[in-house]
Image (cartoon, rainbow, N blue to C red):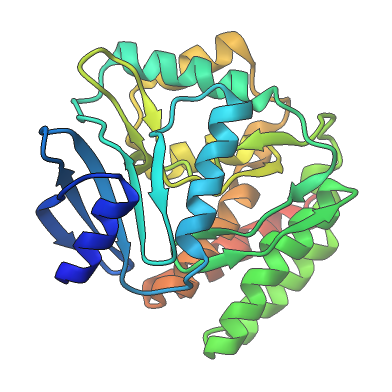
Amino acid sequence: MSAALSERIAEALYLRSARIEGLRGGALSSTAKIVGPSNECYFLKCLTKGDPRQLPAEARALGLLSETGGMRVPRVHAVDAEFLVLEWIEPAPATGIGARRLGEELARMHQCEGPRWGQAHDTWCGLTRHPAAWHSTLEGWFREERLERMRGLLREQGRLTSALASNLDTISDHLGHWLSGVDEKPALCHGDLWGGNWLNTDANLPHVIDPAPVYGIRDADLSMAELFGGFPSEFLEAYEVHFPRSPGYRMRQALLDLPVLLNHAVLFGGGYISQCERAAGSLVKEAGRK
């Protein structure tokens, strides 16, 4: 990290100096710990690849969850196109108590209703941008913002196979099979709720990070949490107590997982293409049995 960038970070935090410790590079960003002159600590994320609007969008997303969702998120201390400085959260191993609190808080956040389906600001999942957009129906939002957008990105990359394209057409035409029974308002969702995006503390106070918030179908947060794991069983148990999953959740789960897999195909290609083909093929067979 350049001395000039360190000086800019210190200036943004109103510190005389900022010591950067444990710098770790990643595919999308570098992270580190900032230690101030009085040993105050902060978390630093520096963008190494991607859109310069991404870190300001992340800061805005954290603010939304903090203000309206009731979930704990790290406080934003400073942000610009190159860096994001957050409150330092000392991580601790996941526990049943922490997971139970996380489930309770997610249930509370999901009861924050939006005016329509979608979001007012751009969000990112990895390098994939989800542009601000509103839709009047769940089916319209899911078709355009979760299926068609991923299809377009795969086509641009030359990764959209004819089999996958055909199956996506069929799924799009039959979305009512899975979604017509959803009788809920748009819910404020984290949008990227996998196991690496929550932190526990020694006091069992869970925090969520890297949100891509959307007023969408709450089942999608729960489905992603199950798809990748990383959540103790107490998480879903507590959620069920405070806000039982909607009827038909299990029937919709494979559909809700498909955009996640498509995004991985966009980001990483490889075996995710064939995984998407298999997942979409299974959904088409299910739609044919309706």
